[in-house]
Length: 379
Ligand code: GLA
Image 1: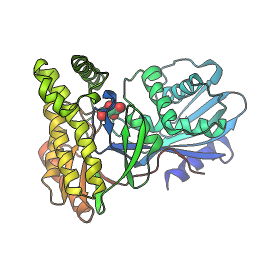
Image 2 (image 1 turned 120 degrees about the horizontal axis):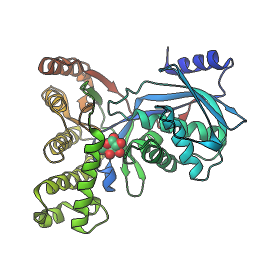
Image 3 (image 1 turned 60 degrees about the vertical axis):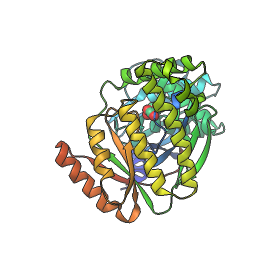
Image 4 (image 1 turned 180 degrees about the vertical axis):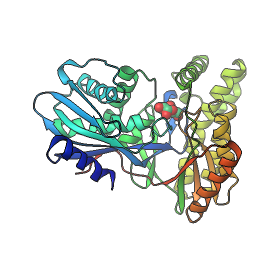
């Protein structure tokens, strides 16, 4: 049964009537442009065909009641009196309500059932999917216009200020604004997003290492601080403002570690812009080479990969039909992404899984995925 039918059925049995509407918002995989978003830089993610779904109907009493199908838990709160309760997944829903109200929206309450198939903790942005599905739900019942960038910002604020995770804007932007069949070049300074068509005849394959990020928050915050220190050295608002030429001319004045961190960000921004050019030319091989270079930079200069991600990227890169592969997301565990000749994708998936399993004794999850639409009202 599709998730759509499941969530509708679960609503019916939980609330005793059909839902008034169904919304969904996708997870994402980033093709290139990693650890650039909080440097005001460029990212090139695509929304995947795995999403958070909510079936719901409005309530007139200012209450929100959400039943999580996967956890079999129901949580309720009052819009006029939001309180932190450390209620796990429900804090994402509440945090979005808080951010939307802070932005001046008058919210209508609702009751609904939430489910989803974005794996949690795998680096595919399951939390952004829940945030943007929630924003869609509030927008639909409250009747204010849907503005993708503003909704993404509300999702990010929920995560930064309500839940307390210091992420950038990439995951929320792509979940809000994704386009079927396309990746999106996002300028994380202006939040301008432009669709980049995938080269013809390629498949995007997600390779989950089955390792989960530990210590990711502290390491993530440390990387952010190092990037800010480098920007201060160059006397610019963010590393986005440093070109490769300027970096090469002046980076000698930085300590070795900060220099490597900054070199990743500066070179990754250049690779991301180059990726858009080669995509426009339909050049899958060139895009693959940029992805391989991105992985090396994340592994050696930014140091956010782990052993399993390196093994996975190497296994993928060694397979016939693979144009390129790299870790994706924050790092320290989770998923790699590969660009593969569509005709060879099935064999590729099988062979990489076997090779990885032989080298690590871990069982990976492999999915061929398609670029899907951002947060939407389905019915
Ligand atoms: C996580 C964050 C994003 C981004 C990536 C790294 O996914 O949520 O904002 O910083 O890491 O590119």
